[in-house]
Image (tube, rainbow, N blue to C red; front, side):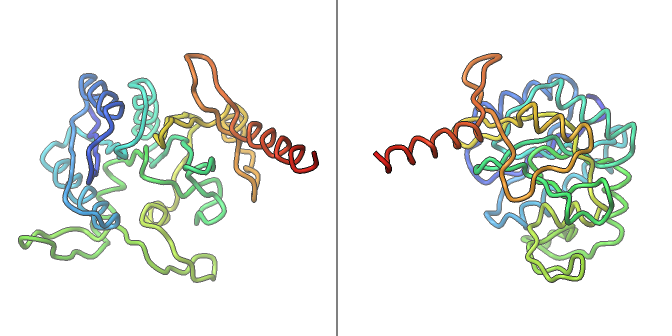
Length: 248
């Protein structure tokens, strides 16, 4: 992973499990950039993206920026697989992880290109060329101490598919890239417990099958190595149990 710059934006104490994952990736050869200093998520993203550009300008051997949130769980092999794909294809790509309500943290319906996705920054890899090309076309703004930052993204109203929508900073960044690829690589998102995409979800993504709209995709909770609980099935079972109790 000697061609990778690992970028983490944080404004809190990092989870020790995420720190361990980052250390392992760094030991595998990745350079590491940690940015701090703003509770405004959009500003924090622009700081980390701008610093990534400047760092990669000084280190031309780093041709993939891997953006990781401070509450993710992943392996070196997963990071390497994602970054190799991005380096070979020359396109941005994300792994699959869930939100706290059990939904995939990505959207294909709003992507500007068929087959592409809008994804979060949780585990997103961007090739150097794409990042630098965007830096050339976005405006700059002055931040603290006269620091110039690239305005790569924001959380604001944007028109997508003829409809004015509120778009988060992660989706808007991906939208400006033309969308990203979503790979069937399940990384954990720490929301008290790590949630991973289920095999069913990964099979759909690998096959290019649309995910169900209006119902969370199934996710599994890791309880022990090789074991898991299907979140959607458990929710349905709990609902049935509640119904029986109400009817008793």
